[in-house]
Image (cartoon, rainbow over all chains, first blue to last red; front, side, top):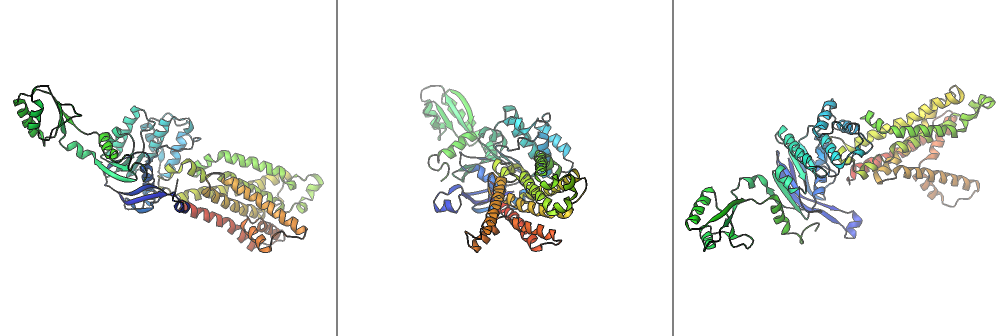
Length: 317
Length: 242
């Protein structure tokens, strides 16, 4: 669905180039987003997330590299098929009413008989009662929901959400999650891109997450693969003599957690091995206080990825 | 789309109506009464009203087009517009054509109503609409170009060009009377060529007054407006969105 090959983007005209003031926002992004994927895009400020999204919508042209969306250049794709897009800060003329804004966007989307679709979209985002209110009088969260409503108008295959939860209260964050899931489930092959700083939200919503650092994709974290892998375990013991030695004997790769002498991380290959080794451990007279699975959260994995480069590569090179 | 855009332009259209009232007050030919009014056909020729109509149409274009591209770019409204299956060039071309039709339409309505109110009869025919049609094209083209180029102040820039052109023409007339020219003929022609062709519009009037049509002047004046319009389109197509 989306193919990016060594996409780079620099800002600055010929004068900036002559004066060496060119700013590199993307330094060679390669990414493949297959149909049916929800991809999160995360990264520190200045990592190039917004630039990447604007390139995908065809608002910016890459300085080098190639981009294809549905086999077309991004602008050609948007002009032909449209994109369900919610910008980071939805800019809608403040003098318009909610109803007028929706009618105008529906006319741009070239919808036939837009009335029922407008009603459905406004009701879905809880703005059915605010049709006559001016956009300028809406709260930030309501404007965000209005932007979401217009994105739901057309029958699209690509949804792009730029910081969609900013301004939304927890109730609507959960609703947004449900809406994205519904939208995705309506037709196979639909693709959702979500640029967000809300890692816990992405963990619930996305299938994979691309970590952008310094204008390049540092890592693509496959969240679905993580769910199926057998996890590591945290083992906590009662302070009995030789307990630590017994753990090391039964779990050869065990490491202590944060220097605590009786808490270990162990990584058995599967449930059977875990059971067998635990039995062996108990047989040595060790008293086990707790055994708990350990899965790295997206935030921890993100910190691992970004932390190794923070201070060296964060931001623009 | 057209109905919705008209609704968005409703306050600007009201402003154009106010402008029309101002132009009605300013046009001396429309305030000849009594014996003078009987002689109006000879006193007020078609061209006399045509220049007021031209100014109204040009001003109307500046009002209706103010910020039509620049504010979308500056405020970021385009981000949602063009995520829908919409071509920016077609979107803004539609708005420009609407502004043009409304501006020339406003001049036509003014032509009819002003005569009925002033004289109770029609003394000037549709030939007076040529100047406003050309003037709206000239200043509509300039406003479009500035709107794509500048982040704000597009119509003010076009209005400034109108002012500079009038000052320049006035200066040329004064120097001609003094039989001295501060600039060489080539430089004079270059400046006159770059500024909006008010003289060509004047030539159109003179030819109409003599019962003919100045095709060369018409082509030059129309071409001038179309040049800036085409340049605006090219720039819009080429420029990235912020």
